[in-house]
Length: 178
Image 1 (spheres, helix red, strand yellow):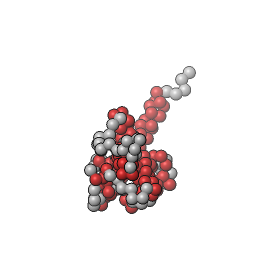
Image 2 (cartoon, rainbow, N blue to C red; image 1 turned 30 degrees about the horizontal axis):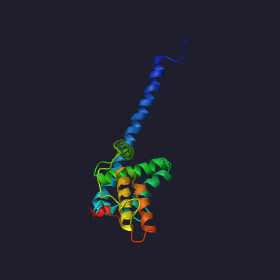
Image 3 (tube, rainbow, N blue to C red; image 1 turned 135 degrees about the vertical axis):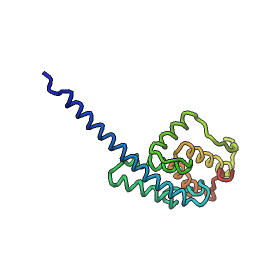
Image 4 (cartoon, rainbow, N blue to C red; image 1 turned 120 degrees about the vertical axis):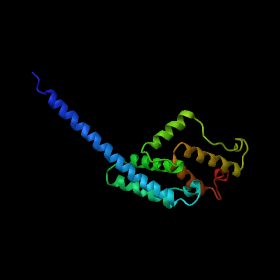
């Protein structure tokens, strides 16, 4: 005896298709709204991007505004805290690279960086392990910050930068000197 006929199955499948289309439409609208915020940030950028992005959400007004925007979405319960952090990283990747916002840029940056295992830029080698100087330490930390940014770990890089500036008197990123 068949209780569920093909018409019922088709109706259930069609209802899920409707949900998928509605979600895709909502995500397109969300990405468009985030892109508008990105475009506004690009227009506001009045100095080299590395300097514009220096610091973290506590010390950099631009980073703070974007963190607050994604935190508000999280607080409303629309996305998880980890998704908010991921979207925030994707926002800054799009900003740095001058590309369109895509919510999965953070995942793509990590995957690409991990698969190649190499940074796209190089700097002079820092001090030897057995003898070093404070200047060499700053170079090494600056290179680590650049590598973290290349991998899309923007929040991590901002936190490390703040730690270096707080704990190391006179720390300056030497990577910015190029």
